Amino acid sequence: MNRKVTKAIFPVAGLGTRFLPATKSIPKEIMTLVDRPLIQYAIDEARAAGIKEFIFVTSRGKGALEDYFDHAHELENTLRKAGKDDLLELVRQTNMESGAIAYIRQHKAMGLGHAVWCARRLIHNEPFAVVLTDDVVMGEPPCLQQMIEAHAETGGSMVATMEVPMEKTKSYGVLDVAEDMGAIVRARGMVEKPKENPPSNLAVIGRYILAPTVMENLNKLKQGAGGEIQLTDAIADEIHEGRDVYGLRFRGQRYDCGSKAGFLQATVAFGLARDDLKDEFAEYLHDVMAMRKAAE
Ligand code: UTP
Image: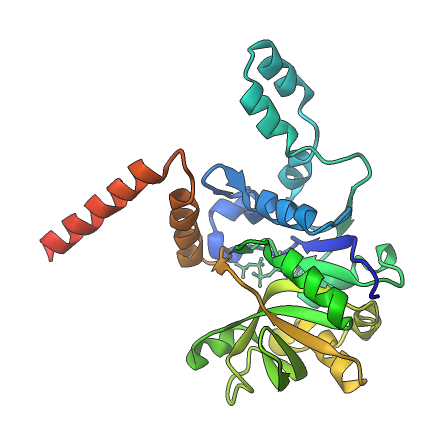
């Protein structure tokens, strides 16, 4: 039986330059899809997967993110007195148990691998999850839960993967596949943003379950693609040292909310998935498209 995964690292220390000027004062993770901040989607997914300890790697200017998880006693009292039980319940669902969240600071944005390494003292000899809040995955069961179930069978390290067109591979970490078992593949290599000759079209998205030895690999603080300390390189080192790394073709749709187009697509998808909005919103979208067509 492989060890249970109960800790997740959420690296949220990036600069979010693609969303300037908004990210001048708002952390990207607080931006909302319909009415919930991106971070809430990530937390809900992790909770559903059985995560008990939530480790945020933050940076300057991310105060609003830390405040978001404080209990809002005044607001809760007001809602209770006003008899707004449904809203009260909604707010309560966002409350986190005292001591369940830890914040670690990354003093300089030196890359995703470096951000994960900043949490090394909170990870002991146990597998841990890494969740990138930019990647929002619509899926049932949620993506991380699918991974944790698969990882309980395989052990080693596991990344979430999806097929992308070959010409898009240069934007992702890409797997070199040793063995394809259907939903799960075993990797013989992993390359970050290959400029040419991608080893496959299986791209890695922002969900990982990592063996503790990945932290040891990060200790080398080796600079990789773009001069950053890459998590991909530390995972690839696992393979070079003879340990297993798997990719899971998760079931679901991933939205790249770190990009403007991806964020807009996610807004449409999550809006249409909401019972209280879908009819009005679908009608609006239909009318917009019809007007565009007529104007062409
Ligand atoms: P991105 O590559 O999307 O970078 O990081 P970014 O800074 O957030 O956004 P842009 O490209 O400037 O618009 C992927 C994830 O890794 C985290 C980010 O917060 C994001 O969740 N990250 C990245 C860190 O925590 N630290 C880093 O040094 C780099």
